[in-house]
Image (cartoon, rainbow, N blue to C red; front, side):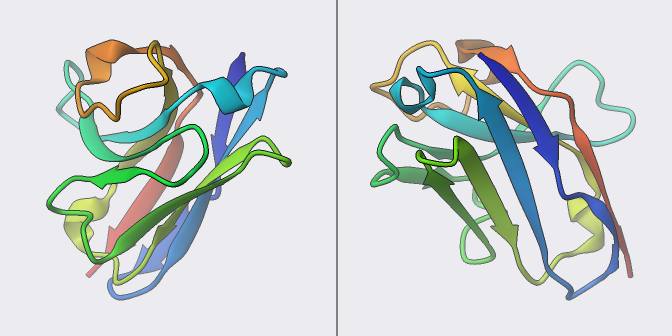
Length: 126
C-alpha cells in the first residue's frame, strides 16, 4: 500500500480546501485512514486531525477539526478526502494521510499508523 496526499495550497483565512489521499493497492478498503498534520517546529509529533473507518461509516475528529473539517472516502476510487472549511492560520501545516495497522479502530495516536504518504502543504494567511 502506498499513499499520496495532495490538494494543499496557500489560501486566506476563511477559505476552504479539499485534500485527497490517493492509495494504491487492492487492500485499501481493509484499512482505517487517518489525517495528521505537522506544523514547523514540531518535527517529533504529528497532530491528529481526523480518521475514517474502512467503509466510511465511522469518523473521528480532533477538537480543532470538529465542525469545520469532514473526512470521507471513496473505496471505488481508492481515495480518502479531507474537506477543510473556514480555515484558520493555525491550520497551517503539512498534512499527511496514513493507514492504521488495525481496521477496527479509529486512532488519534500517530504511532498506530504504519504506512504514510508524502505530505501536502497547507498555508493559511490571516
